[in-house]
Amino acid sequence: MNKRYFHRVKKGSYSLHPVFFGSTTLQELIEEISFDNQGYSSIFALIDSGVPAEKVTAFLGNEFPASNRYVVEGGESVKSLASIAEIWDFLMVVGADRHSLLVNIGGGAVCDAGGFAASVFKRGIHFMHVPTTLLSMADASVGGKTAINWSSTKNMIGTFALPAVVSIQSHFLESLDRRQLLSGYAEMIKHGLIADDSHYEEVLKSYVNGEIPSECLLENTVNIKAKITERDPKENGERKLLNFGHTLGHGLESLLGAKEDKGVLHGEAIAAGMIGEAYLSMEYGFSQEELEKLITTLKPLVSHAYFSEDQIPSILESIKQDKKNEGNRIGMTLLKGVGEGLWTEKLSIQKVEEGLRFIVKVLSNQTK
Ligand code: GLY
Image (cartoon, rainbow, N blue to C red; front, side, top):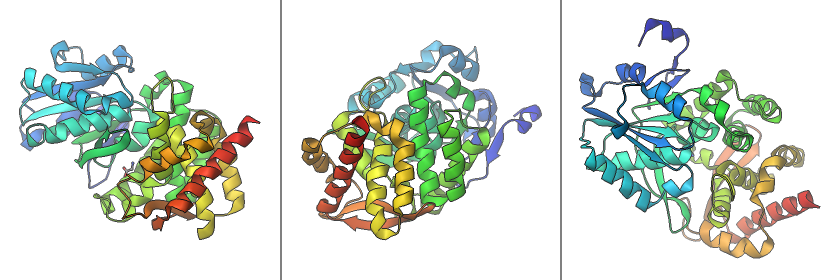
């Protein structure tokens, strides 16, 4: 990497996988991660159609062959076996081998799907994530989880597979619409709630102003996730903290669908899930005052996650399939307070239902 860039591109010091912060190019990153010190035999790019073409070209370089690019629609539709099969077909046709690299450029769904496709193609090839949405920068691209959905349940099939490198470049956020940007804040707010009260306050300030988060804030949020993940990469314990808001949130997503322009976005469903799970956390020490603050803060996000009481049974059916469950107990991460998560809780289905009913109550108060 050109020395000049060391001032702009900062490498996070994580043992799991490198994360580079700042504007950079594919060429510069490749120099950092050459395969077996010999370089890659070929490089292919999986590109989210929502990312402006000029930004993709500026990153890949003018010389990057059009035939090595595969463009997919972002959003949950790419997280299906049919889409993965198309990606595998593409890799077969272009002659990818075990020394090839797949570069995933896009939102969380493209990172999840591209990571999954690469992690099992020819028993696993290297992949790089270049997240372009706030959600994928703050969460999906970091930590080595890959997944597709199955039978309308989120992230049912997947692997733990580490990217060769993650490149976080906040200029991609300039082209994000406001709803997408705000939705991405949900995962940053989550990081504050489970692990760091001062990060929570900093994130809220930036979110309330509707700003693109500063590089420093992004770095702090990735830091929280990366540190938890490197201590527990396979989610045997502490990593479960990162699921706060996701038990109820994934249930909602399964019902409402997570599409780019309609339905509910991932961060919006997670915001609603965080309200329900924070409510259930009151038995463990989370205060009424903090719950009210969270509800007020997340109001613009949860209004997109509307559902009614009579939809609760089908949400519960989906939640019963959650990977974190044991028998008929539902695994859920709760909070003792702001900055202090609890990852071991196993709740009855009645308790989970209470959490969903609370979200309905919050949503109906908002629409009055
Ligand atoms: N998104 C939660 C995790 O990566 O563990």
